[in-house]
Image (cartoon, rainbow, N blue to C red; front, side, top):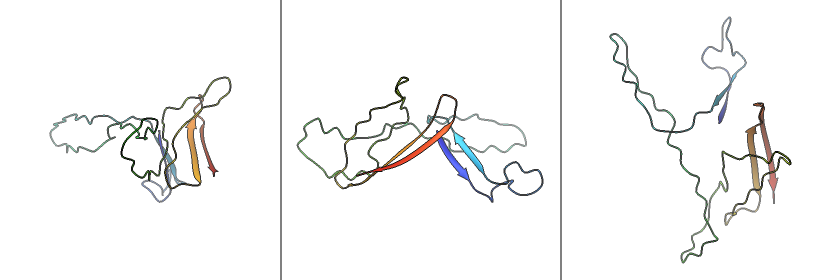
Length: 128
């Protein structure tokens, strides 16, 4: 899911009866995919095609377990990303393995998600 906080002023943020005068939170849960056109041709109606979500792409991470002849510098800024992490029901633990890049000495770990009841969570930790 993509979560965005919208701070005022934004559309309909002022005036009587506005539903989000203090801001809003937008939560997008649709996965990427091909764009579809509905081809509406109604008399007197303007047809506008808007860009939607992009095609899902797999996150690249090098596999250093496989020997290779040419080693290039690893300058990745995002070392691991996985939108489908599920915890063990008994221990609520997850084992995550990844390779560090060639430049980082301190890592920022950001965990975002929600529980089975839909409660959102965000944790930020630093490790050296």
